[in-house]
Amino acid sequence: MSNQTYNDENKHVNIDEETETASKNHKRHRGSRRKIIGMVAGALLIIAVFVVCFTRVKSTYNSYTVKSSVARNDNSAVHYVALEDGYISFGHDGAAKYSYKGAKEWEQTYEINNPVIDRCGNYIAVADIGGNLVYVFDKEGYVNTVNTALPIIQMNVSGDGYVVASLEDARATFINMYGPDNEKIYSIKTVIEGDGFPVSIAVSPSTNLLMVSYSAVKQTEFSNSVVFYNFDEVGQNEVERVVAGFDGYKDKVVSKVDFISGNRAIAYGENTISIFSVDEYPKLLKEIDVESPIKKVFYSDKYVGYTYAAGDGKDGVMIYSEDGKLISENTIDDDYSDIAFVEDKVMMYGNNSFAITKLNGKTVFDKTLEEGIVALMPISGENKYLYVSGNKIQYIELKHGG
Image (cartoon, rainbow, N blue to C red; front, side, top):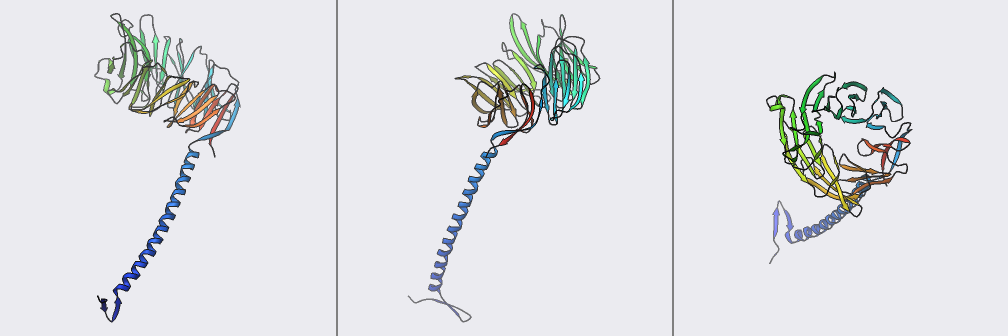
């Protein structure tokens, strides 16, 4: 077969020669492309290894530095609340605010036999359990004093600085709310023979909701319930302002109720945990029944967790979302006395052991603090803490390892 030619304005090109040239160019380009792809793949692999190593380093802490340290001149009865710009100490004879360098910024004296502290947002309240006084503070100092007249059983403070206290009388129990001027906002009277005894109370951050756990004996049967009261427009038309009641606990004692955020609340006891949505009319989102006795319950505005004895010197740790969805299940050593969420991680300490894990249980920090731990509180983020030992108060910052 003869070679074909293409004539265009006296230009003659041999098609077979053109095909051969194109094939050689294609092979040469294909080889170059393979080299480029190989070089890119190698570079990506190096970057990936670097990212993994860098992420691993940046996600773990190997040490800490002491940003400031002051000597403790108080006793074991003093409690501390960490703030971003310092800390507040509370005891039997008064409260004081300090900078992290130990400079006293304000002081308020009082006399309290059995102080109990509660905090919500910018407000901190100290109640004299068995007495009738509640002192309210913010980080700027003293705000006001509430005189309840009757002996205080429990106390809670809202994010607006309002105080709710359950009070003991000879024949009844009163749950009263007090405003910033010590005025009584409302009073709920409960009779043990009828309503039961208020085991635990909690006021919402926005002040409008009250949550109460009641225990009662009715017709020789022991029962427990959780009741929500609303004190804004939603509760105006409800009987005694009750907007929801949950009485399915039977003989399970609900020993603690609390608001974990503006729209979530929690109730728990020895074998049960309930998570509620509290938008206007509260609803039960999740009921967690626990076979083994619960050792500790801890929570934040995003997570709820609890521990139980798992055997062999271990505690089981169960972590749920604020909606009650199971996130993780793992184990820790059982020698941690305190456990809490810090952002998206879990902080644990006890005696002189301090550890931080991810939600899945992976350890990112594990250190023995030789001076012992009286208290350990996060200040800002997951790596800054107020560390209280037997004779020092230190501001520490965790450091990433190499």
